[in-house]
Length: 399
Image (cartoon, rainbow, N blue to C red; front, side, top):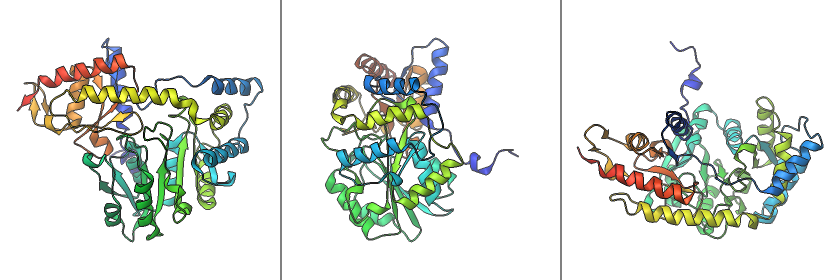
């Protein structure tokens, strides 16, 4: 009998973190592993943001902050949302957390009761499922398809809503698919939610600045649903600040106050130094990230062209984030004589052990026919990684 709680026993380890751990283990044994499993920009934090943090240290900004974040940062977030997204929020509606993941967990734990249904389009970011389970909610999946760039339609959303539905969680740009919902597509989803006022919407917009479609659109812009939207964002992806651990939410005051109460019993306010750096990030014109965006677009095009040369893999053109989520079902039921590939988990472990390339199986994201490839790596590494994958896959034959 386990000494651990049922709650923790129901939660799985993050597959993305698990693959990174396995990669490190192989590296420690002397293997030259190329890790395409990690969701982290391979850029450095901009100098102006680092300078703001250094100033904060020199000015002894080392004390506890308010649980929901400093007023300076919450005001800067409100100004950013107005400048970039044309959304009006007050500082009382903003909660700063130790990463966007905590913002998501706060919202789910404050809204979802045991048995409440939470609607999640597939594929989804790995932690959505586990956070819902911690809240004792029931996941309701809406399957999307590669032919539609992994985006759901209003009709598909409508079919998933019941009297028990409490929350809808999605990301745009999406991790793992890179899908980006357009204004018209979000308008169609918002029209469905307008007919179901008991459903709240958690919009994960952490990849806002890594968007190749030209303009980021938020579902919070639609007046009929705005009071039910919990907008989650942060600085980790757009400003290459993963280690600074700053995320935030903007929501109606009642939800923000509840999340502040919860956070006050778990972590309290996040790092004072990181918050000073985040103020500078919020005040930075988003055009400053265009060089990183250009590099990611070039890498996306490179990876797609290389992967398209591998027989049997089906791809598409993702319009945001830094992932490709190709269909690899062609290789299920194959073997190299020693290892049989039954699913994407088997395929990813085979490629890690044979080609020393780490990717994440689609099961982790709710689509077992795919794998996630991160192209947050140099072009040379991406070329070498796909070359190794192509060679390893060529040894597989139908069992």
